[in-house]
Length: 164
Ligand SMILES: CC(C)(COP(=O)(O)OP(=O)(O)OC[C@H]1O[C@@H](n2cnc3c(N)ncnc32)[C@H](O)[C@@H]1OP(=O)(O)O)[C@@H](O)C(=O)NCCC(=O)NCCS
Image 1: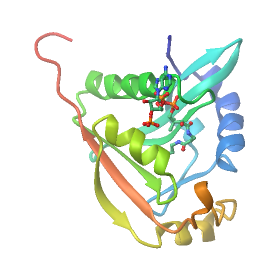
Image 2: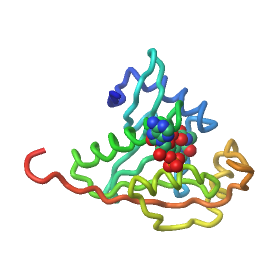
Image 3: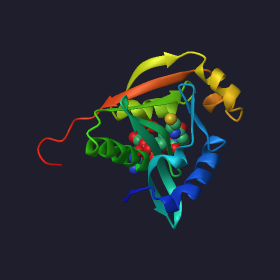
């Protein structure tokens, strides 16, 4: 299951993938708008097309995962994808990986907790605010749940012991 770093040659295709999966190339997190295809990503291809993608950015608060998608869910690809992101953080000696998900996304909340993420904040009404900037965010999400809130989750990354 090989993952590769996004290169400049991948950016347009990554932008299109994000638009298909997230309504536009813009992704909202904590009131900020990002264009993840301009940032960092790891991806997997199947028959030439992107089949799994995680985008992220790093600053002094840690590595933030902006999007995570697997086009063939339930077969372990998402787990491997997140492990690739955690490895990327470790390589950069970043000890905190964090992300926001939405209140309706119970699959993702379960998935991230299994991978060691903890819920550290509920931002009540944050998605309603984000929708004013990105109107493509749906009102109703998975399982018919109204989308209002952001859940912030984080994982601690063990540093390499010895030489990476
Ligand atoms: C969240 C997401 C990235 C996870 O990717 P995935 O490829 O389904 O991840 P995995 O297959 O590793 O794990 C998902 C589930 O399948 C199970 N699974 C893993 N390998 C499996 C296998 N070989 N056979 C059957 N099930 C398997 C896992 O135990 C996990 O179970 P859980 O849902 O009860 O936690 C993917 O579902 C997705 O793209 N969702 C839509 C976008 C999204 O919501 N992204 C997150 C937004 S913040």
